[in-house]
Every structure is written in structure tokens, then in C-alpha cells.
Length: 460
Image (cartoon, rainbow, N blue to C red):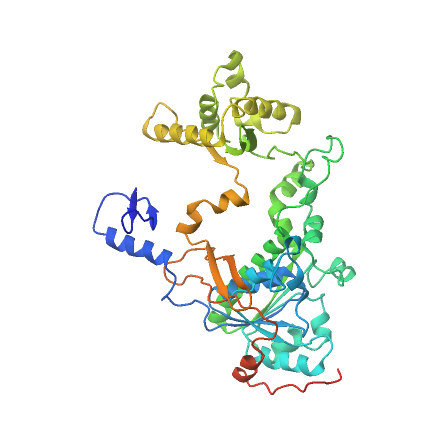
């Protein structure tokens, strides 16, 4: 292990072997990872029109493009995107919701009334002639009905990449029936089938047997990430061929993709996955356990990992049968819930004797010795303390990796947002500003892209 940087100041902590001639170059690479400034932006020749409205899937996708240098122009009605008001516990900065600020990084803001103004739709079409990517989240067919859908825009811009995010996509009978159902995170989760698999078993008493939703808008985040990935691959295709394309993202597809393995298993063996609470469908031990001062996550699914866990918890040979009863993976897979829960409780009887830090230390100590000893079988039980958001922020890992950036904005005041979700040595993402006032870039966009100023009032 080597600590690079000034004395007593952690800059990068990395594993390397020996002190060969390549060490200097490796140090330079690490330093590049930590300092994104001064390197090229991979998408600085890309212009994105973000016409999503009241939908964080589109906003999140546009945020990824913006962080890698694209000029993202957020199009919203004169009163602002309703997404500005969506925020935990009603907390805002200068009246703007925290999620909108986080995902609004590096964007330009322009007001166009696409619903009511023919002239504004015409201006949007003219902007789309110069755009590389259009993102929209309106009901399937709505943009086409306004004359600014992929069919019309691609006729004037053959290289246009048009990303549409809807609940069920642009085709199929269900897409038609639910065309006007708004794409929301909770409906995406429910429609994908994942909610039915999360929570305590149905055999538990009320209200513990209710299905659960995933955490902070996971449906929208998965859809947004899918849209950004599809758009990025389309950019590569465009560079090779000059051709644009339609990117059709159905929220149900995107979110169902992370339930794909249980669904495929259920289809193949005709036995759908039930809700199994603290258990995992495939691996065990693989979940959360109570300890003296909270919870720990434990992953020890391989046979030799499990045997190592048994040893550090003092369960080896317990009553003479413990290790033998659960010796192999097939014995621990929770296809029989009562059997798996019995093992879960036996493990928890031991974790409750220790604090989270003590359990983490025991696992790390054992793993370190196992790496050097052929007699320990290489078992590596993984134990991690389950952090609260408050305690997670105290971890200096976030500061070392610059995972959060604090900004002092004239309108918003002091805000802190996530940054640099991936580290790259040559073309890293970065955050340049967070200002997101409604229509703040109207004059800039009209001047740069040659749009005449619209009249103050008009009839659609």
C-alpha cells in the first residue's frame, strides 16, 4: 500500500506492486483521477435539448450528458418545470427542490411553451435542427402530434438522436392504452414487478407484509441511466455512420431489467420468487443483521467464506452440528424459508454480542490472515456497518474522492451536491455551475442559435 501526496494529507490510496519504473506514471494517473480540471470534455461538441417535464428520468439522463461536457438546454414552460417542486419534506433552496438542483448541474435554461404556443414549437424545431440529442418524456405520440416528434425532426436533421422515455414505450397495445398515464417512479416500480418482491414475507402479520418501494426514485434513476447509456451508444453509431436514431426507453422495461434473473428463474422452473424479507433469493448469508449498536451487512455466500464467518462468530462446532448442517451453498439457499430463517436467527444471536466496528474488525483481521495462509482456505467473509446518511457523510472517503461538491450560488446560496460519480483520467465528468433560474439562458440560446425573439403574446 502507498499513500501519495503531501505528508499527513491523504490524496490517493492505492495498491501497487514493487517500485518499478512505471510508478511515476501510475502516480500521475492517480493524480489525474483526483483532479478533473484541465482535461478535455468528451461531449463538448454535443448539444442536447432536454424537453422532459415533471419527470426525473429525462432530467437525470440530461444531467449525465451535461456532466461530460455537452451543452444541455433545459426546455421548460414559462412557469417552470413541475419537477422543480418535487423535493423531500418540502425542503427547497430559493424555492427550488433539492433533487432538481442536484440534477440541474451545468445546464442552460430556456422557456418555451410547447403545449400552447405554435411559435415556441417552431423555435424548438429550429433548435432541433442544430441539436445532437433530444430528450422528451411526454406521452407516446404527443410530440409527434405537435409536429415536433422524431418523425418530423429527423426529416430536417438526419443525425438527430431522439430519446423518448415513457412507461410502456412507443409501441404495443399496452403502450397505446396507457399512453396518457404519466411516467412516475412509483408506477414504474409497481409495474415492473419488483415491489411485489420487496418486503417481509406475506405470512407476516399486518402491516409488515406489505410490499415495499425501493429508495429514492430508483425507477426514475434506472430509466434515466438507461436513456443516457442508449444515447451514448447512439452517439458512437452516429460518429461512425452519420446516422441518428430513435431511442425508445420504457420505464417498465428498464426497471424490470434488474428483476430479470428472478423472473427468468420463475419462468423456467414455474416457481415465482416470493417476498423473502431479510433473506436473499440466491445467496446466503447475504443481508443485514442486528448488532449491539445498529446493523451490519454480511456477505459470505461461498462455502469457504461461510466457514470463515462461522469461525469468527464463534459458531464452529456449536452444539456439534452447526457447521455440518449448513456446510454447502445448497443447504443455505432459502428455498425453504423456515430453514433459512433459523440460520438467520442463529447468526444474529452472535452478531448481537458485538458492535458493528468490532464485527468489521474481526472480518478484516481474518481475511488478512487468510490471504497469507494456505491452511485457512482463503475464506473472506465481508462485513460492513450499515451507515445512516448522517454517519456516511462523516466518512472521509467521500472527501478524498471528492464525491460531493459545495457551491456558493448567488441565487441558491450554499448547496452541496454529488459530483464525479465516475473517476476518469483523461475525459472526466465535472460540475461547472448549479444555477437553474427559470429562463436564465433565453437570450444566450436565442443569440447563439439564431432564433428571433418571440413576441410577448401570441395565440397558439
